[in-house]
Amino acid sequence: MPSEARVRLRPAHEAIGVLPAMKAVFLRDLKTAFRQRQDLLNPLLFFVMVVSLFPLGVSPEVAFLRQAGSGILWVAALLSVLLSLDHLFRHDFDDGTLEQLVLQPQPLFLLVLAKTLAHWVLTGLPLVLLAPLLGVMVHLDGNSIAVLCLTLLIGTPVLSLIGAIGAALTLGLRSAGVLLSLLIIPLYIPVLIFGTGTVAAAADGAPVAGYMALLGAFLVLALTLAPFASAAALRISLSNS
Image (tube, rainbow, N blue to C red; front, side, top):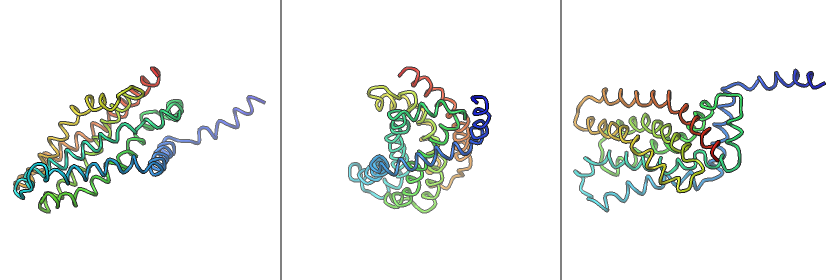
């Protein structure tokens, strides 16, 4: 009887492929986030508040805001993503779901990639959609706003992928938010430099293809390496917890 039971259960077990498992993880994270709307809205409100308050604290002059607007938006987007990273694995770690993901037969790095994609859809994509409105607020012209949205569309997934490594490494630690910032912000600097540089070049009428190519290279590199690093960091954090 035990051998027959194993034979009957094996096809059902093997029927769960990699893509259905990734889809299930992705949809679960979306549903969980919409149940905890405060964690979902905090990064967006922070993004809007930083961009709105910057002219009041520095200078409301149109020429200054037009020159510094892309940097303001990019720094605000970077900090907003950073603010949301602590919750990427935290809830699953607290309720034991993360341990079940590690034990799944599917590759852990693909499940981590699905979770990171859900994080970007919930955090990075809304920032891209809000960017045109805030770009008008800082007096960017139409071409600069379009380039800004494109750079955010390419760059924010990189921020989520790199941030997942730091979130996995600091999982279960006290004062994880501070340590996460210290680990991740230096890795964010190249994306920030080329993101703002692309918009500045577009505003000056210079070609931006080279900047876009570098941002695309960052995205490909992050997609290739970050899920493996995040999966390894999760295994280390769980083994030490």
